[in-house]
Amino acid sequence: MSWSGQMKAEERTLPSVTMKLWVSMLLVAWFGVLGCVQAEFFTSIGHMTDLIYAEKDLVLSLKEYILVEEAKLSKIKSWANKMEALTSKSAADPEGYLSHPVNAYKLVKRLNTDWPALEDLVLQNSAAGFIANLSVQRQFFPTDEDETGAAKALMRLQDTYKLDPDTISKGELPGTKYQAVLSVDDCFGMGRSAYNEGDYYHTVLWMEQVLKQLDAGEEATTSKAQVLDYLSYAVFQLGDLHRALELTRRLLSLDPSHERAGGNLRYFERLLEEEREKMLLNHTEAELAPQEGIYERPVDYLPERDIYESLCRGEGVKLTPRRQKRLFCRYHHGNGTPQLLIAPFKEEDEWDSPHIVRYYDVMSDEEIERIKEIAKPKLARATVRDPKTGVLTVASYRVSKSSWLEEDDDPVVARVNLRMQHITGLTVKTAELLQVANYGMGGQYEPHFDFSRKDEQDAFKRLGTGNRVATFLNYMSDVEAGGATVFPDLGAALWPKKGTAVFWYNLLRSGEGDYRTRHAACPVLVGCKWVSNKWFHERGQEFLRPCGSTEVD
Image (tube, rainbow, N blue to C red):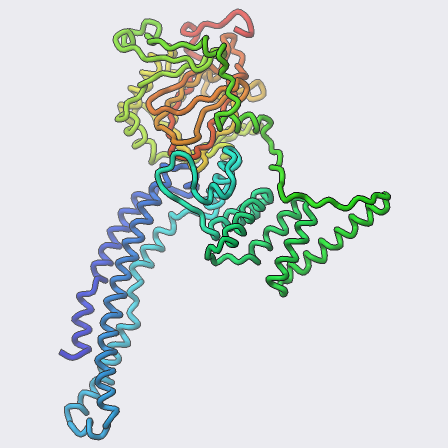
């Protein structure tokens, strides 16, 4: 068989046909899996697991492409070796070689038929299947918003749990099963994300980490000049003019042609001279004191930030020995509810005033998995109600995805709802639907009230069921680190335990809001946090939880 005939026959045996079939099946499968997921992956670990499977299938697709390329290169290499041997013989005695009519015929045939066939093989685009697969799946890849959100999540964990960039870069986090480290380029990406958000405090921390890893000899595509460019301007924005000047000079020593650095240097020198002139005018002889390179974290909008984050770390909990003596555990019969008389729940006091209790074995593992299964396709970015407009909107202080389950969705939903009614003694007829939430990277919900305050009287008007009288919170997973429910005004911290639930009243018996119940979901440091909750409303509880006679009852 001739070379051209051999190539055509072998082409039919290449993995390209198999690959096309595989890619087609892959696309159909992943359209179904990823079709319901749109961006904001960082807000739900549950949804991010889909990306793991997508990436795994892309690797398989890539390996198929490599096999095709290797088969093609193997044939080309074989042809090259064959031609090398033949041409070395023919070129040694061209006329003698061509004196044989068969050799003359084969030369003509090779150049007219075989070499063009080789050209076709070389030009064959074996990457088409892989590129098609990648192009389709890219529609469902994380976006720039996701990358920024993920970077902010790491910085939130850094701040809340007092972790330095080196600890995060080395992946030295409590409760982790897998080793994970940040490269120089990863750290540079963190610093650049902070810089683009105008967060110069974190820009400095991460750019300094990049320099530290570069100085340690780690290889990277990021250069020191790039780092110094960001770092010098960031420290200037933090008010450290001396260090900005020093870093800019270092940058210019590495890259003398850097135009922006040259302009910044002249600008910084002029500012420094103006500062000196002002001091002379004021008859001050003291030199401008350079900063130590340590910068304070900017104050933000949350007044109880320090208390909240301390509680998240397990610090500042006000569970004194005296208070502990007032906390007990017991079997809970649900005020004589027949079902609970037969099978009471274990009840444990978590706090005395306001009374917060924890119930054990509220949901079985099977029930939890079923609820997660039906909730996952419905998960959407959790929202908060704008106090001024009343409109639901996403917010940086609530990072999770949630879905609302009706009793018609599955018998397990109705069963869990009825169980919460038996435990609390409150009716679920006027309660909100069962909300299921999954927290994402550094997932949190900063301090908030569950009930509506006097300036938000229309918050639940459309429901027609009054205010949220009580909260029943089911923990549907254990969390390796972080993720506590904290009450800053109380100094209380409750840690997730799978299958348990905590319950508290948001309103006093008078109907007034109990402002002590302001609470938060701490950022998840390590793990995947799933919860579900039921908000009970005032209407229908008139005889189940009678009003008190005073405002503070």
